[in-house]
Length: 259
Image 1 (cartoon, rainbow, N blue to C red):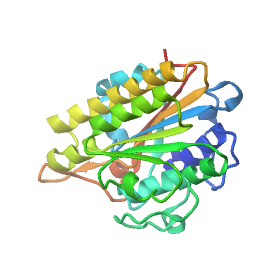
Image 2 (cartoon, rainbow, N blue to C red; image 1 turned 120 degrees about the vertical axis):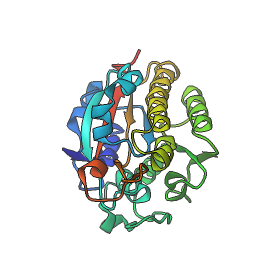
Image 3 (cartoon, rainbow, N blue to C red; image 1 turned 30 degrees about the vertical axis):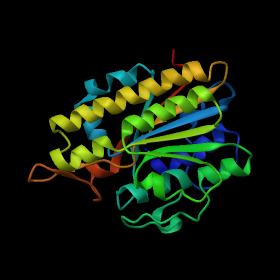
Protein backbone atom coordinates (compact mmCIF):
# COMPACT_ATOMS: atom_id res chain seq x y z
CA UNK A 1 0.00 0.00 0.00
CA UNK A 2 1.32 3.41 -0.97
CA UNK A 3 1.36 6.41 1.34
CA UNK A 4 -0.14 9.80 0.46
CA UNK A 5 3.45 11.09 0.34
CA UNK A 6 3.75 9.34 -3.04
CA UNK A 7 1.43 11.87 -4.68
CA UNK A 8 4.25 14.43 -4.82
CA UNK A 9 6.96 12.36 -6.54
CA UNK A 10 4.38 10.76 -8.83
CA UNK A 11 3.10 14.12 -10.06
CA UNK A 12 6.69 15.33 -10.44
CA UNK A 13 7.55 12.25 -12.49
CA UNK A 14 4.51 12.77 -14.71
CA UNK A 15 5.84 16.24 -15.47
CA UNK A 16 9.27 14.79 -16.23
CA UNK A 17 10.85 16.30 -13.11
CA UNK A 18 13.33 14.53 -10.88
CA UNK A 19 11.70 13.29 -7.64
CA UNK A 20 13.08 15.20 -4.65
CA UNK A 21 11.64 13.13 -1.80
CA UNK A 22 12.17 9.51 -0.84
CA UNK A 23 8.54 8.42 -1.18
CA UNK A 24 8.11 5.89 -4.01
CA UNK A 25 6.64 6.89 -7.34
CA UNK A 26 3.37 5.12 -8.16
CA UNK A 27 4.28 3.36 -11.40
CA UNK A 28 0.68 2.27 -11.92
CA UNK A 29 -0.29 5.93 -12.18
CA UNK A 30 2.50 6.74 -14.63
CA UNK A 31 1.28 3.91 -16.83
CA UNK A 32 -2.07 5.64 -17.30
CA UNK A 33 -0.44 7.88 -19.92
CA UNK A 34 1.57 7.11 -23.07
CA UNK A 35 5.23 7.73 -22.39
CA UNK A 36 4.36 8.10 -18.70
CA UNK A 37 4.27 11.87 -19.09
CA UNK A 38 1.58 14.54 -18.57
CA UNK A 39 1.26 18.05 -19.96
CA UNK A 40 -1.32 19.01 -17.31
CA UNK A 41 -2.39 17.65 -13.93
CA UNK A 42 -5.55 18.30 -11.91
CA UNK A 43 -5.39 17.28 -8.25
CA UNK A 44 -8.80 17.31 -6.58
CA UNK A 45 -8.51 17.17 -2.78
CA UNK A 46 -11.71 16.33 -0.90
CA UNK A 47 -11.19 16.21 2.84
CA UNK A 48 -11.53 13.16 5.14
CA UNK A 49 -12.75 10.54 2.65
CA UNK A 50 -11.78 7.27 4.31
CA UNK A 51 -11.25 3.91 2.64
CA UNK A 52 -13.91 2.32 4.85
CA UNK A 53 -16.41 4.94 3.73
CA UNK A 54 -15.56 4.13 0.11
CA UNK A 55 -16.07 0.42 0.72
CA UNK A 56 -19.34 0.85 2.60
CA UNK A 57 -20.91 3.49 0.36
CA UNK A 58 -19.36 2.66 -2.99
CA UNK A 59 -22.56 3.53 -4.86
CA UNK A 60 -22.18 7.16 -3.78
CA UNK A 61 -18.95 7.30 -5.78
CA UNK A 62 -20.70 6.34 -9.02
CA UNK A 63 -20.12 9.76 -10.66
CA UNK A 64 -16.38 9.31 -10.09
CA UNK A 65 -16.49 5.88 -11.70
CA UNK A 66 -17.43 7.65 -14.92
CA UNK A 67 -13.75 8.66 -15.03
CA UNK A 68 -12.74 4.96 -15.28
CA UNK A 69 -10.30 5.48 -12.41
CA UNK A 70 -7.45 3.46 -11.02
CA UNK A 71 -8.52 3.04 -7.38
CA UNK A 72 -5.82 2.82 -4.72
CA UNK A 73 -5.96 2.26 -0.99
CA UNK A 74 -3.49 4.74 0.51
CA UNK A 75 -1.98 5.22 3.93
CA UNK A 76 -1.94 8.63 5.59
CA UNK A 77 0.49 10.11 8.15
CA UNK A 78 0.28 10.84 11.85
CA UNK A 79 -1.23 12.84 13.31
CA UNK A 80 -3.96 12.35 10.73
CA UNK A 81 -5.10 15.97 10.61
CA UNK A 82 -5.41 18.14 7.53
CA UNK A 83 -2.35 20.46 7.58
CA UNK A 84 -0.01 17.62 8.51
CA UNK A 85 -1.38 15.36 5.79
CA UNK A 86 -1.44 17.87 2.94
CA UNK A 87 2.06 19.01 3.86
CA UNK A 88 3.19 15.40 3.42
CA UNK A 89 1.17 14.91 0.24
CA UNK A 90 2.70 17.92 -1.50
CA UNK A 91 6.25 17.65 -0.15
CA UNK A 92 6.65 13.88 -0.15
CA UNK A 93 8.05 14.14 3.38
CA UNK A 94 7.10 12.74 6.75
CA UNK A 95 5.84 15.28 9.32
CA UNK A 96 9.12 15.20 11.24
CA UNK A 97 10.87 16.34 8.06
CA UNK A 98 8.46 18.99 6.76
CA UNK A 99 7.86 20.44 10.21
CA UNK A 100 4.06 20.47 10.62
CA UNK A 101 3.40 17.95 13.37
CA UNK A 102 0.08 19.15 14.80
CA UNK A 103 -3.04 21.05 13.77
CA UNK A 104 -1.22 24.27 12.94
CA UNK A 105 -0.98 26.08 9.62
CA UNK A 106 2.44 27.68 9.22
CA UNK A 107 3.77 28.37 5.75
CA UNK A 108 5.92 25.44 4.67
CA UNK A 109 9.55 26.29 3.95
CA UNK A 110 10.59 22.87 2.61
CA UNK A 111 10.51 22.15 -1.12
CA UNK A 112 7.08 21.18 -2.38
CA UNK A 113 5.60 20.08 -5.68
CA UNK A 114 4.65 23.71 -6.28
CA UNK A 115 8.25 24.85 -5.85
CA UNK A 116 9.52 22.16 -8.21
CA UNK A 117 7.11 23.29 -10.92
CA UNK A 118 7.97 26.95 -10.45
CA UNK A 119 11.69 26.14 -10.70
CA UNK A 120 10.98 24.31 -13.97
CA UNK A 121 9.14 27.31 -15.41
CA UNK A 122 5.68 25.82 -14.97
CA UNK A 123 2.58 27.47 -13.52
CA UNK A 124 0.70 25.90 -10.60
CA UNK A 125 -2.55 27.21 -9.11
CA UNK A 126 -4.48 26.50 -5.92
CA UNK A 127 -8.26 26.85 -5.60
CA UNK A 128 -9.39 26.57 -1.99
CA UNK A 129 -11.60 28.01 0.72
CA UNK A 130 -11.07 30.56 3.48
CA UNK A 131 -8.32 29.75 5.94
CA UNK A 132 -8.33 26.02 5.26
CA UNK A 133 -4.98 24.27 5.33
CA UNK A 134 -4.30 24.25 1.60
CA UNK A 135 -5.07 27.97 1.53
CA UNK A 136 -2.48 28.64 4.24
CA UNK A 137 0.49 26.28 4.28
CA UNK A 138 1.62 26.82 0.67
CA UNK A 139 1.51 30.63 0.70
CA UNK A 140 4.23 33.07 -0.39
CA UNK A 141 5.13 31.33 -3.63
CA UNK A 142 5.24 32.73 -7.14
CA UNK A 143 1.98 31.09 -8.16
CA UNK A 144 -1.73 31.82 -8.39
CA UNK A 145 -4.10 31.43 -5.44
CA UNK A 146 -7.88 31.56 -5.79
CA UNK A 147 -9.53 31.58 -2.36
CA UNK A 148 -13.31 31.50 -1.97
CA UNK A 149 -16.02 31.08 0.64
CA UNK A 150 -17.62 27.86 -0.61
CA UNK A 151 -16.64 24.60 -2.33
CA UNK A 152 -19.05 25.44 -5.13
CA UNK A 153 -17.10 28.61 -5.92
CA UNK A 154 -13.85 26.66 -5.79
CA UNK A 155 -15.12 24.12 -8.30
CA UNK A 156 -16.52 26.79 -10.61
CA UNK A 157 -13.18 28.58 -10.68
CA UNK A 158 -11.23 25.36 -11.11
CA UNK A 159 -13.35 24.51 -14.14
CA UNK A 160 -12.73 27.98 -15.56
CA UNK A 161 -8.99 27.59 -15.04
CA UNK A 162 -9.01 24.26 -16.84
CA UNK A 163 -10.83 25.74 -19.81
CA UNK A 164 -8.58 28.82 -19.86
CA UNK A 165 -5.52 26.50 -19.93
CA UNK A 166 -3.05 28.91 -18.35
CA UNK A 167 -1.73 26.54 -15.66
CA UNK A 168 0.16 23.27 -15.73
CA UNK A 169 -1.06 22.09 -12.32
CA UNK A 170 -4.43 22.93 -10.76
CA UNK A 171 -5.19 21.92 -7.16
CA UNK A 172 -8.82 22.15 -6.00
CA UNK A 173 -9.74 21.60 -2.34
CA UNK A 174 -13.24 20.77 -1.05
CA UNK A 175 -13.78 20.53 2.72
CA UNK A 176 -17.53 19.96 2.74
CA UNK A 177 -17.49 16.27 3.70
CA UNK A 178 -15.06 16.91 6.55
CA UNK A 179 -17.24 19.72 7.86
CA UNK A 180 -20.45 17.71 7.83
CA UNK A 181 -18.70 14.61 9.16
CA UNK A 182 -17.56 16.47 12.26
CA UNK A 183 -21.11 17.70 12.91
CA UNK A 184 -23.25 14.78 11.75
CA UNK A 185 -20.94 11.77 11.80
CA UNK A 186 -19.26 9.99 8.88
CA UNK A 187 -22.51 8.25 7.91
CA UNK A 188 -24.92 11.11 8.57
CA UNK A 189 -27.36 12.04 5.84
CA UNK A 190 -25.76 15.43 5.25
CA UNK A 191 -22.30 13.87 5.24
CA UNK A 192 -23.20 11.29 2.63
CA UNK A 193 -24.74 14.02 0.48
CA UNK A 194 -21.42 15.90 0.66
CA UNK A 195 -19.60 12.74 -0.33
CA UNK A 196 -21.77 12.42 -3.43
CA UNK A 197 -21.06 16.06 -4.22
CA UNK A 198 -17.32 15.37 -4.04
CA UNK A 199 -17.59 12.45 -6.44
CA UNK A 200 -19.68 14.52 -8.84
CA UNK A 201 -17.28 17.47 -8.59
CA UNK A 202 -14.32 15.34 -9.63
CA UNK A 203 -16.27 13.92 -12.55
CA UNK A 204 -17.27 17.42 -13.63
CA UNK A 205 -13.70 18.70 -13.49
CA UNK A 206 -12.38 15.73 -15.44
CA UNK A 207 -15.00 16.27 -18.14
CA UNK A 208 -13.88 19.89 -18.28
CA UNK A 209 -10.29 18.68 -18.66
CA UNK A 210 -11.30 16.40 -21.52
CA UNK A 211 -12.58 19.50 -23.32
CA UNK A 212 -10.27 22.28 -22.13
CA UNK A 213 -7.11 20.19 -22.41
CA UNK A 214 -8.11 18.40 -25.60
CA UNK A 215 -5.03 17.27 -27.49
CA UNK A 216 -2.89 17.33 -24.35
CA UNK A 217 -1.86 14.46 -22.12
CA UNK A 218 -3.32 15.01 -18.68
CA UNK A 219 -3.77 13.16 -15.40
CA UNK A 220 -6.10 13.77 -12.49
CA UNK A 221 -6.48 12.44 -8.96
CA UNK A 222 -9.22 12.31 -6.36
CA UNK A 223 -6.88 12.54 -3.38
CA UNK A 224 -8.12 13.04 0.19
CA UNK A 225 -5.77 13.65 3.09
CA UNK A 226 -6.97 11.39 5.91
CA UNK A 227 -9.99 9.32 6.93
CA UNK A 228 -12.45 9.59 9.81
CA UNK A 229 -14.24 7.66 12.51
CA UNK A 230 -17.50 7.97 14.45
CA UNK A 231 -17.64 9.20 18.03
CA UNK A 232 -20.03 7.77 20.66
CA UNK A 233 -22.11 10.97 20.57
CA UNK A 234 -22.79 10.58 16.84
CA UNK A 235 -20.33 13.16 15.61
CA UNK A 236 -17.18 12.35 13.63
CA UNK A 237 -13.47 12.88 14.17
CA UNK A 238 -9.97 11.94 12.98
CA UNK A 239 -6.37 12.36 14.03
CA UNK A 240 -5.75 8.96 15.59
CA UNK A 241 -3.46 6.12 14.53
CA UNK A 242 -6.32 3.81 13.62
CA UNK A 243 -7.33 2.23 10.35
CA UNK A 244 -10.43 4.38 9.87
CA UNK A 245 -8.35 7.57 10.07
CA UNK A 246 -5.20 6.34 8.35
CA UNK A 247 -6.53 4.59 5.24
CA UNK A 248 -7.98 6.70 2.44
CA UNK A 249 -9.23 6.12 -1.09
CA UNK A 250 -7.35 7.71 -3.98
CA UNK A 251 -8.45 7.53 -7.59
CA UNK A 252 -6.42 8.43 -10.66
CA UNK A 253 -7.46 8.86 -14.25
CA UNK A 254 -6.09 10.37 -17.43
CA UNK A 255 -6.84 11.74 -20.87
CA UNK A 256 -6.74 8.14 -22.10
CA UNK A 257 -9.74 7.20 -19.93
CA UNK A 258 -12.11 10.16 -19.75
CA UNK A 259 -14.55 11.01 -22.51
